[in-house]
Image (cartoon, each protein chain N blue to C red):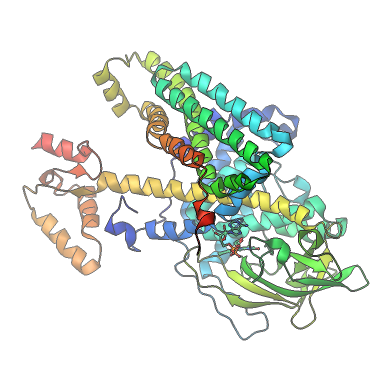
Length: 205
Length: 390
Ligand SMILES: Cc1cc2nc3c(=O)[nH]c(=O)nc-3n(C[C@H](O)[C@H](O)[C@H](O)COP(=O)(O)OP(=O)(O)OC[C@H]3O[C@@H](n4cnc5c(N)ncnc54)[C@H](O)[C@@H]3O)c2cc1C
């Protein structure tokens, strides 16, 4: 809607309907708040924590793969950093919930931002995973067509004329963009969760 | 023209390159059903065609009325019935189900991809199909043989639709607080009374029966979620010949006016106000939430997919717009055709930039413009060409 400006807001274009239609998704079939509590209370501890462990292992494997692709070095580094913060946060939650004292309410208060941060990490991971594959195909395509990717001008011209190359390059750029522009927000969220702030419960309403 | 747009190459990449769905052909289960990558690609093509041809901006012409008939039916836009029939014929919503129930035994990932396409084209309508799938799947997984024979094929082939009835005025996120009650009739059936609210696809006239899975508490059962059982409550009782018969006292009390998904009727359903609503227990007593969770988990994945589907078509529309939108432009030559076009928009009510597209598309006045794509730092391609021409 923002891209379309005023035209996005009026019914002539489908954007206003998309916005209205999509809003229900955060409300029905478990509100976002309930989904966040479900992630925290049911999913993280599912099968004695084995499901989450598997998640972390698969994520680490994807990071290793991304490290092997030159253009994705920054993506891999960003993901590795965010994964460490995710692990630290979950360990903190486990300690607090086991503590049995007033700190046990901290993970519950943090559930919604935690859902958001873990969502960012997961999306960055999937984009990176797809980018690894896309870069492999792109390299093969360049080799096939005799294009030298290091020659910026020739490479850009190639993207302009070859739809498949343009698409594959776009997949890589998407992963880079997300890792640089959105993933750091997850780090910020983990940081804010780390303050263990309980003021929302202490305020007198 | 449909507003729906999707990046088809990206969908292919995800399905066939990244997830390697074609590889599933090596499993005996899918090979037996005739699945291979070319079949999968053909299914996706068919889904795209159906979505583009059949979907219009939905929800704008939805009319609903609380009629004075006992059933207070909600009326669907006239196109909906046709759309629902053509949709049902493709069997997409049931593609992963077993053949004996009308399915195609195809991999679930294909069903998800097709659903993303349909939902992007018309989220409100696609909900009818998805809820039907989930409700029928409960019957397939937990229902008695009699229930399967009565309902499954009809639902999986889209002849009847389904819902999920959990929410009540006092029980939203806290489902265990529900008050709808079930009293045994002594013949294995139950008498149901209570009110459910916000029921998606709750009532409509697209099909001649609607099957409601309803969470209710059997008289005397414990409080909270542990005392909740699941019942099947058809809108019309099913006759011996398998056809819908007598009205089962499921009265639509209200159809909500709401922000979006206006093409999907969100209903208050009153069960048994006239003492004549019959339901049949699914599985065992007090295990209702366990069975319902199968549908809820499917619906949760589906809701995530809804977000993705709408975001995808929104992105593609925004991208197209940004590429075409020309602003901060030096107009060097206001040709006659362009002036005429500008005049047009005042009478036709098109926004001015749409005329620019039209003029552009007809090849008129292009060389008069030197544009930049809004939000992009690169010169708009058309603009660049024009500048070169000048
Ligand atoms: C268009 C539409 C279609 C729907 N379709 C269906 C349907 O087909 N079938 C059906 O059964 N229902 C349906 N619903 C109902 C929907 O699932 C509920 O509205 C939803 O579960 C929230 O319940 P509620 O409205 O009572 O809100 P509440 O439960 O009152 O929630 C209000 C707010 O409080 C928060 N909250 C609630 N409990 C807690 C807690 N313990 N801790 C922290 N925060 C909490 C929630 O996250 C939310 O932000 C539909 C609703 C709509 C609007």
